[in-house]
Length: 174
Image 1 (tube, helix red, strand yellow):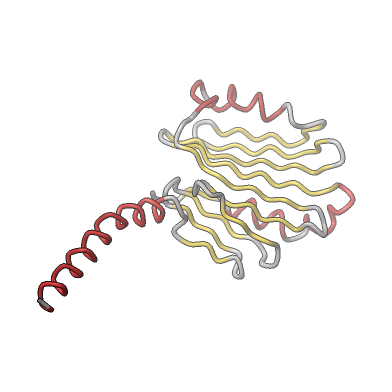
Image 2: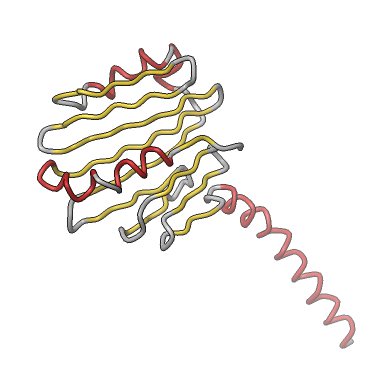
């Protein structure tokens, strides 16, 4: 009798594991390979990109596993990095896809488009905000970095933070 109860408990435990294991796998697929908020690093193999930043700001990961938001509410900075599997507006080429992004700017002194290499960089002002958008467009994904901070706080971010983040944003092997 005791052996039968133990066997039934073992079978019940196995059923529970088999039912919940796919859920655990699915959730792990929706999360980044690594997020080290204290070290300022993030790598997302699902969409194939990585980024680094100077540690310190608050970091939250998107619930869908597409990216992160790094924010310094005290100084008004927000960094959003995300990936998507569909090209969406980029389906007709980078230049056509950029039209919508360009509308966000009130002045756009820096616009680099490297369609042959699959990336672009837009940097300028959106009202009283400095806005930089860097994107990679690959055959199977689009990865976007958006960095915003108030013009009045530009000195805080433009010496190290912004250049480091922008140059560190890169595609990696999925």
